[in-house]
Figure 1 (cartoon, rainbow, N blue to C red):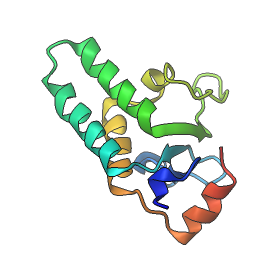
Figure 2 (figure 1 turned 30 degrees about the vertical axis):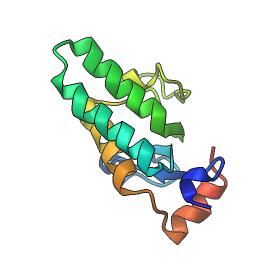
Figure 3 (figure 1 turned 90 degrees about the vertical axis):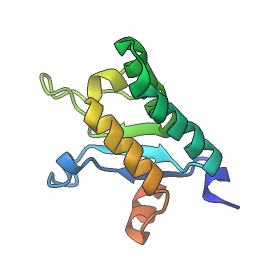
Figure 4 (figure 1 turned 180 degrees about the horizontal axis):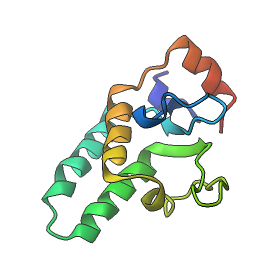
Length: 126
C-alpha cells in the first residue's frame, strides 16, 4: 500500500531556522504523507492564495493548507512564557510567519519520503 494510504502515516519536518537547536528542544512539525491528488489540491491552493486581493483570504488560505498537512508538533513554545503551544488550526496563525508556512509546504511537497533515522523517530511521535 502507498504511504499516503497508510493510516496515521506521518513524517517530521524541522524548519531551517531551528536546525541548530538541540534535538531535545528543537521544534518539530509532524505532517501527513500526501497522495498526488492531495499534492495537486495543495498546489492549487498555493497558486491561488497570492492572487487574492483580500489579505484575510490570503492568510486563511495558508492556514487551511497548513491544517491539511500538519498533524501535530512538539517543542513549539510561547516565547513570552515558555509554555508549550497546543496544536490547533487557530494556533497556526500565531506560530508561523508567511515564509515559514511556505517552507513547510515546500518540505511537505518535496519530502514525502523518510530516511531510516526519520522512520525510527516518527514511529513514536504524536
